[in-house]
Length: 84
Image (cartoon, rainbow, N blue to C red; front, side, top):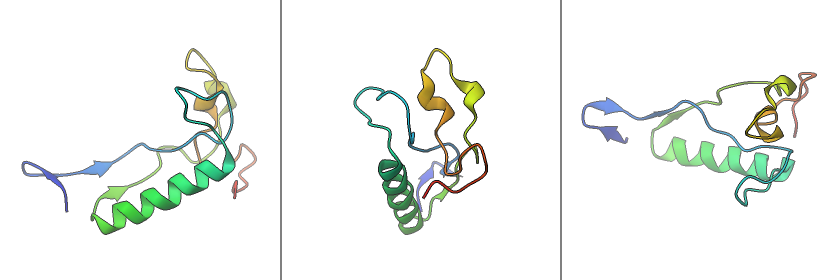
């Protein structure tokens, strides 16, 4: 288990965009979203680090200065259907 002095490490916001323009070379796609989720879940389980996704569903209203990728950062689409 990872600790920061006496505190447990918990990852509270993570994800990979499933669509949108590539920010700094990180290409958004359904395949990359799935691989990122599976690899992070396996790593966090092995390292005894709690991890959860911050949001459940795509939120199209989030498109702003960061681009449209921030609206497509989760595992379910806006119609509550699992992306993969």
